[in-house]
Image 1 (cartoon, rainbow, N blue to C red):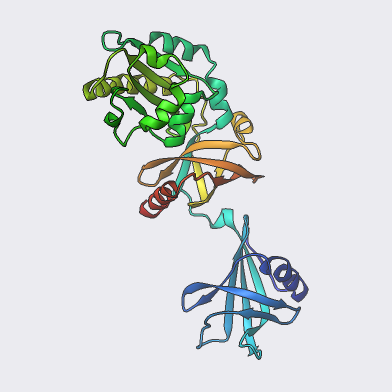
Image 2: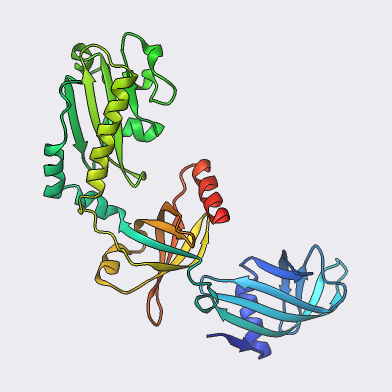
Length: 340
């Protein structure tokens, strides 16, 4: 519900406590430009602005908090010796962001707590799935599906470089192509083991939950050499196993369709019903993974850290800082929000 404040003392308290520490914007010819509040007294607020409306003395300043939008109306009564505008406060309109939000511009669904992903890996369904995985022994001398919440050296290597491993022949280091972990990095983790005494080629494809969280890999080695055909065939086998793991039902996600209140490349706020699962998924400082869905139905997997859980009349308002690991991730999310 919106509220209008006209009492001069209340206006001064709001301006002095909020407008001095939070970004403030002034509407100038239909454009919001950033300004700086220099001084705040009960009857006069002094602000520095790069430009002002020349055709009117009315000045409208806007400031946003997590829950509200503050729209303040002033009258310019003069300019000080430094060229700063001296404004007389008239009123402040406090708008509820929940009421102002455009429903269904974006939605969030398929939400899971990152810790629950790791806990799910001990489920017996995962063990049975690994046992049923095709061994493809006719192509490889060694084959395994490794799933574990704790990273071993191969998981760390692929996670660090964001690449799979494909070494066609250890006798020919230059055969390792740029799209795979480099031979030198691979050799550094294997030279101290006896693996290279028995096997001369290797393929290792990561298993990631929604391409975010490393939970294992599909791994094969051969006593002589492997070629591109071997890799392409193995990739199909790995893709089938990864699909089976994701569809195994062990990952308990919230399938609620949650309206997004605000979204930008660094943070998001959305509403979620107060369900039993919500109480488990959302905790302050916890990491959650979810699908960000546009009106057109396009999806993007997103990871965020919960920074706010506020009960409303009907739902929880969940605020998250988005976890962006690389400039490419930031650009990709910005492009998604801009395009859709």
